Image (tube, rainbow, N blue to C red; front, side, top):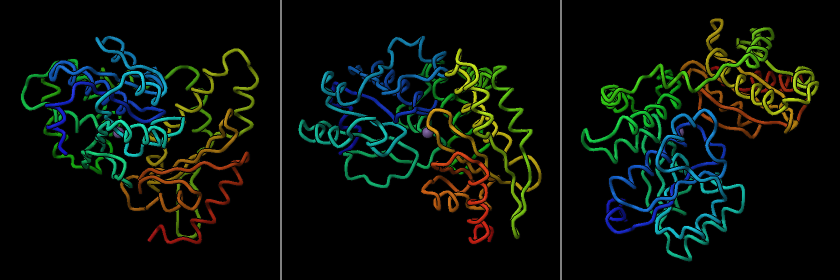
Length: 348
Ligand SMILES: [Mn+2]
């Protein structure tokens, strides 16, 4: 089965992505839905179980179509699509908080075609009918490549696609993908009037709350030596989080978001870049989940950090990985990670 055939025959498409959606997921759902509706005259139901995160609203709210926030299975039952397109995700269980097997069974029972469009390798493709998997910067880029053949696309589509690419590459900092294609389409997007700085400034809304957390991460930053390894380390402890979020019951959610988002902002932009060690890890205690989240980052992939993450049942790529543990004390996690580094061959 080919996607082209489906586009010629089917009329009703439900487009969805993973829970806890990042900008590439949101932009892929939005851009594909608009293209299916406007270019192909399809009936479209864009859906994200979690809805659209705040940092994407400036682009999604002004569209003719809106992304629904509802349960996946319920939406499929109600909308009754002929095709469900899963974008930026290759595992059906990542698309719903409820029973993904029930979704799968429903798709099979009613002969609904499932299409996967993603830039991550698929571990199990047995559940889908059509797969478009490419080593691209982002799913947004794959959608642009597949659906836009000439210059007949709007500034609007251009902004959505560029925002997806900027987010997944962190402004082209990461390039472990086929960047030839990315840099080939980039001038087409810029020629439409899309502005990188304008889009990127919406990705991180650095509030005064953030500066409190960022200060803590800079304050706790240190370079650690273990045998031949030298790496960066910093953390947000339970004590800090309890004092910062717990002390003031007024805006707990806002402060919690500030901790999580500024933690990842620091991790993505500074963790591996400070000092000459070129890699490291950072920890934060999650106030609501009562667990410690760990993130590794490495400049390039001279060290495979995912090997360490996997020792703690986590995962990821060589240059960016992570894990979660049932711990409260960041020092315990630090010691455990040190032990793994000491006994492994990740530096070789
Ligand atoms: Mn993506």
